[in-house]
Length: 282
Ligand SMILES: *[C@@H]1O[C@H](CO)[C@@H](O)[C@H](O)[C@H]1NC(C)=O
Image (cartoon, rainbow, N blue to C red):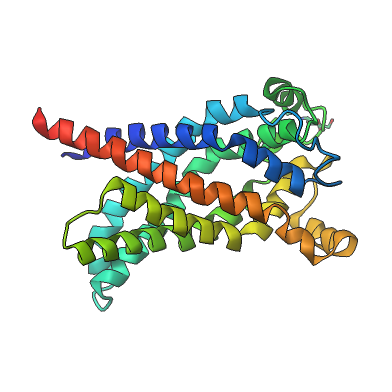
């Protein structure tokens, strides 16, 4: 398959995978946001309206997942060929892991261009600050907060990246490594989509649990009425709510990301292997 086709395969597979996952786990994500929001679960809606904010998730999930996979696949190929020549002393498995990690981090930054505004709009709707995603979006466009439209849309950008990079550095190499181990155990070139999905699920759940404190900070920054720095926010949280606040929502977060990781990577691998096999028939 040439580079253009590989690109299209990443785009379609990533988009399909992202949409399937986001739809399936939306209510659990809402519970998580409400557990993390200031004032707690019941103050922010409890079990009412679990699909509030779905609109922004639907609109954003395919483009952000596609951006991720396009960037990931492109840089993975790039790094795999350049890293060994740049660092000839490193072993093949080290440069392979390093390329996965770097490529996935680049993928996350690219995805955040779409994901961050969508998250701001979504989380404010999930916590019932607004009735619909559209209202939440219009509030930012109106600049009523006084922070400016771009700053408003990208509220929590650096903290989201700060959450995604460690997440990726844990999840992706673990995922690729587990798949490789399983494949060499079975003496096949590639494990089945189902087994790949199981590896993704375990890797994702572990990474999700570890990065929960950064997720809490991101939620609070996005929901805050005024703009506040992440350092000030963290200090306030420790003083007012204690360290345990940094693990709020860890249950739903770990659960949805490990189950979501299985669906996301399962759909991704299935769609891309379908497209690749069809491609080779033509
Ligand atoms: C947003 O509002 C603030 C404060 O009222 C103002 O200083 C700023 O120029 C506005 N920005 C935009 C993009 O309208």
